Amino acid sequence: MNTLMKNRLQADIARILSNRFSESDFLKLIGLIFDKDVPNEQIFNRVDQTSPDIKKLKLAVYHPIELDDRNELVVGIVYHNRTIESKVSLVREVFRVLKNTGYSKALIAFVPKNSQNWRLSYIQLTPQITQKGARWHLENPRRYSFVVGKEIKGLHTPVKRLTSFATQSPKTASKLLETFSVEPLTKEFYKELIKWVNWAIAELKIGANSDELKRHFIITFITRIIFIWFLKQKKLVPEELFEEGVLQNILTTNNLSGSPKTIYYKGLLH
View (cartoon, rainbow, N blue to C red):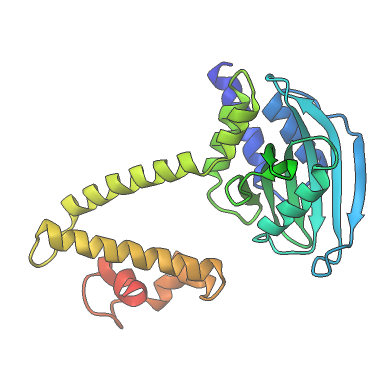
């Protein structure tokens, strides 16, 4: 695939992931990723009301896609009344349904009611032999999903990963698992973080100007950033604290001492 075609493919994937869920767009996404059309015909469509806290879980499963390693992958959509964060329990409920269908691998879109965002998850069941006989085991549901949608900023990782999978051959279950795995992402994150810390130590100018003091300051700074971001994600602090236009009217040199470059740190993080 040449560069122009790859860029066009990446743009199409990015457009779908950055919008509200649409069944037609979702099936188009599957076609882009696997270079195969998904028959717009459902194997089954069921409403599960066995879980009182869900009220209604609607699962639609389409005909499977055959991967290059002969594994079959089913594609499904789950409509539910939980929040976007509810992934583990929902994946386990889908697992309960899938293990009776004969399919062990699935790509599922989890779509919360009245939400601009949705979750794309890869589910893989592996057979295990126990003292009680053979049984299906669910791979860790926390590790293999992307949150996407209209309100999600920074979709670089899922777009990059899915584009990479779409342009490689052969397309196998192990490569699909790697595409959704957080382990490569974690390694990449820490590699970039270490690079940034080393850069910051060289650039930072403080009183004693020692590398040890700089390193301590930077670690404290990063810890505060992560903690405040956690508060933001849990909606425990106002979104306005992260909007530059709003902060310009709140954090000024009139109410904080020091250089304008340190206003955000002293006024919010400190």
